[in-house]
Image (cartoon, rainbow, N blue to C red):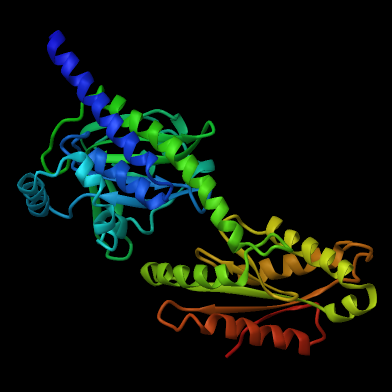
Length: 393
């Protein structure tokens, strides 16, 4: 490459990185940071890819899921968007400023990839990158396992959308890992499916540069988010409070409708807790509540949500595909652990819990979930306490 072309290329890359850095420094909101990253990757003054997707292990630290995406649903829509950007003369910085206007705009790839996930601990490299086609999960898993960027031209990577039965295809694609404190925290996936532009290996440098900037910005956003979460955590027990539980339940119900799967909840109530307080004092009761909350938190999956509903009542929201048998096993395991644990000055067996389990299907009213679990809890108390009951209509 002639020296003048090399200098122009380096100048464009530095100008791009400076614009992205400036935009990221203006915000600590996660979604806005993701918007800036994706806009930079897909804009003509940036890296000029047709589409881009960000997979992050944000709420579920061990599982990559789609967080945000940019890109049209068809070549026709792509053409309209590109023509609109040219007509409005939207440069990169002016596009960054349009974040507020983008809120609520449907993200085609995000909606199609809502069921996608890759467990970080289960990530494995591919035996070979020479194949007729790939599964998208395998490509992302390979990127996580090798911790290296890659690009593949002319070969498709497919994702089967189980909700619609359709396949989502990526072609002329590249992906790079995002690191946070030395560990893979996310993956950026890009492709050129509409214009079939070949991705050259040296373009991975630009993508990796964005990933490095993203890592810094996401760490800032994470610190900010932790401050916000302090208002979502119960001050005594350290698990989520009721207000956050109600918001989380609403969001999870919307997700369950998209995925057409049930939600399960377990309500725990410490048996005869009032007499514990009355006999041994509230300080002793507080110690029991803290210890019990941590027992629940330490013995449930990271993706499940534990919250203090009020007083001595705690809820666990079981996410993912959870059967009645699975939920009963979780409830019984935790009940048994409580019975075997010495709480504060109490010998094992002196503190016990009753538990009720409820389910709702995606086409039901999610408010029925707590009511059903609560009815099952009442049944557990009627049956002598220190047991787990499943809601029966």
